[in-house]
Image (cartoon, rainbow, N blue to C red):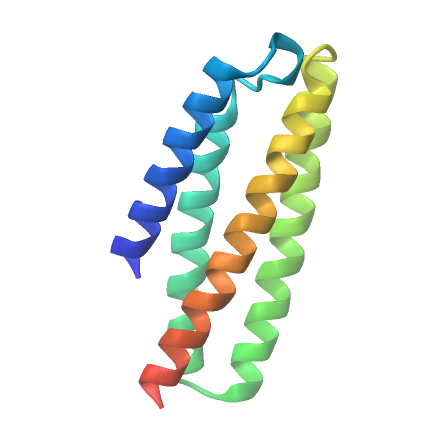
Length: 121
């Protein structure tokens, strides 16, 4: 799973860097590579915790999944709000980039979890 996450994150960083070179200035988000690194770390930690919990009981897995999802959602909102307060000019580009990466990593995480859980049955 870590190998796939590294590959996925590397591809996203390359796309982010190309995006920042090719698009107009108002659509650029210089923080994009850092957003990818943040989601890489969060995905690795969450995935490890969920796989570890899935070996215990289904109730623990559901509780842990819902808890980590809620925690990450609030943490992400706090990060977006802080960035918007600090850099008002680039706030919209940051929020849109963050949202795109959030959904990409969410899809990636769900697919990875499904594969891992099926493999562990």
